[in-house]
Length: 95
Image (cartoon, rainbow, N blue to C red):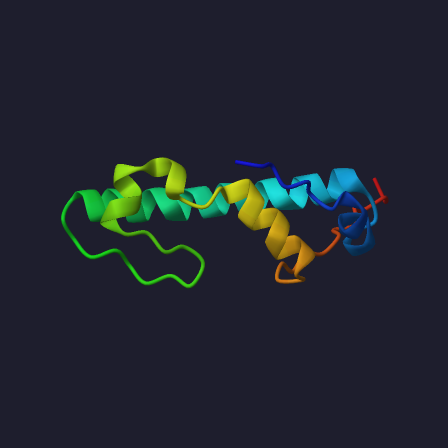
């Protein structure tokens, strides 16, 4: 299976620097991973998975976990597509 290169030049257009982009994507990837694990546990217990527009998991995907979308890839694509909202929090310099 060929590996697709990630367009980091497009990522630099979305944020001020790559470090910030990595931090934003990492936080979102953790959220996506948590959502996936909740759905996996729910499906494994025999219940219907909760409806979530970001994560779709069915029983066949659980049997082969490599079919699940990778949280980091999903988060980076959301960042590139402008689907993530983030803001810079300025530190109070009056100490």
